Amino acid sequence: MERDVLVIGCGLSGSVIARRLAEQGRHVEIWERRSHIGGNMYDYVDEHGFLVQMYGPHVFHTNSEEICRYLRRFCGWKDFRIDSGAVLNETYTPTPFNFTTVDTFYPPEKATRLKEKLQAAFAGRKMAPVMEVLQSQDEDIRGYAQFLFENDYAPYTAKQWNVSPDKIDPSILARVPLYFSYTADGGIRDRYQIMPEKSFTAFFEKLLDHPNIELRMGIEALARLAARDGRLWLDGAPVDTPVVYTGALDELFGGVYGPLPYRSLRFAWKYSSEDSFQPASVVAYPQAEGYTRITEYKKLPIQQGKGTVYAEEYPIPYVQGQSEPYYPVIMAESKEQYAKYKALADRIPNLIYCGRLADFKYYFMDQALERALERALEVCRELL
Image (cartoon, rainbow, N blue to C red; front, side, top):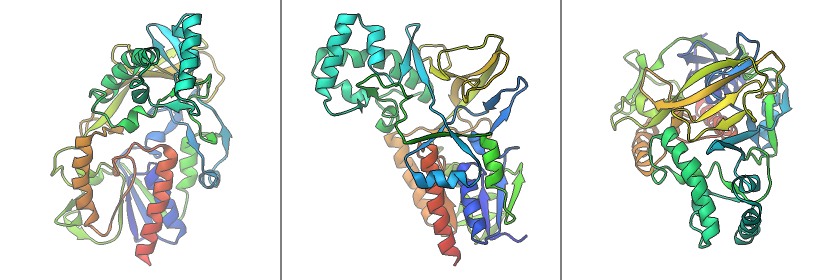
């Protein structure tokens, strides 16, 4: 079929846009350079019979009933609340850090006094970013925050982002706040916390199953597609049909303003004959050598089977063509640099960029989905 729209990438953003356009009667062609669908949400059953996620743990959470209705169009979903923790000074504590953390690292009398002070100082609030708690005038509160910062946030940030915590965007550190209660919900407060009944890959199979969608795998789009002189070029010729691009925006423009900073990951997969390896499905190890966290997939979701399988997560530099760009490193300098690329992209009327990489934002999955639906509507209006 002759395409109306070209979509680069069949992760969440690209797939959602493709489906919405296909339902509007548009012929959509998707180019995906990997050998599988689903982007970083791809999962599969390993040789031990466990469902694992190739690119790290994902649980879908949102407060939007509309988003949930959209998801349920394509597969069944089940409630699932992820459990998480951290190991500090060889001692385990649930995360997000809360009053259980206080009880774990302080003797009873000091723990009681500190909890009372926290509730008084942050009256009416359930949580606060660690950077805010560090500014407290109370010596005990400030000391508690300093202990967590030095033993968790600082070493974790150094490994994950390869920058000092004072340079990273505050929104990143705010993703794991301190709680002023005994909450034990993994830190996710959204109304809906769900996992697909079968798998994320099965969800994507249904999402992409439409007669107006043609999926082509193993195509490196940047070998054929480029942006320069205020327009898009495909195989050396100008192209005027809409192109939805979900990759790194700097790479589309040949890095004219220098490469945007991203972090990549390496996973060390391991199998153990024991039934349980760690107390929670996802545990951070900020003081460990090299890796930041371990995901035990037998617990994500809960699965039956002999032994258990887990993956150690090692942050590494992103090198184009050699690793995957997982996370945009959001700092003041990188936001200014991205703004230059965005200005170039906005000059090209048939370029629709979307997603964590293209938008250079640390989206949650529901945010990425909502953004994709909005962008799809924009494309539909342009095609009228």
